[in-house]
Image 1: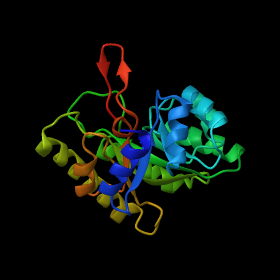
Image 2: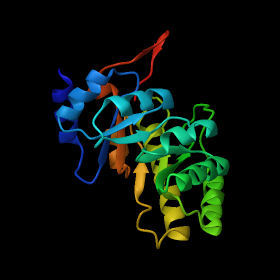
Image 3: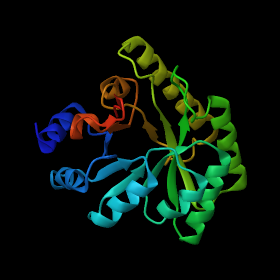
Image 4: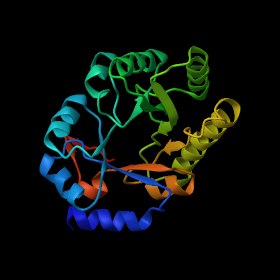
Length: 229
């Protein structure tokens, strides 16, 4: 099927209250433009250099999400235009985003990335670390970043019980942080979880934003294997 047909099929499965991020990483500008012309406006990239190239080449009403790991020395390149950063995994990174956003006279929306998968990964906070960052965020009164939710990736597995339990865990952390610290901030409302292989389970478990790439643009080959998102 075409990108347009894939998008239409996926959107039929997603409730109106759930935001679809089309993950366009490694895909050419032409593929993104086809999705754009089919009505999609929110796209996710995981590498800063690729995001910059596509930002320059594509329509400026696209909402770009940075979904991959963000190094502090590259923050300054994306802060001027990015709509949402999904991958804040340290207080230091949050501080750098705030400082760069201040220079651009912007308030940048961000998500804290939590590590919920059973697989080993380099990036992602645990519940206690995320809570501490939220406390610092409130105490320091960051003026140019706004924490609007959490993001997490479940174990890459067809074990539905396992994957659902990880999504459920993230939903509980989200609810706990919101009720304890951010109940007065209506902007803390995004729970970004679910990708091509598990987004329907994620929605069932409370996701408000899904990141779908493979099911829209087709598989991506990385050296000897495939990465699904």
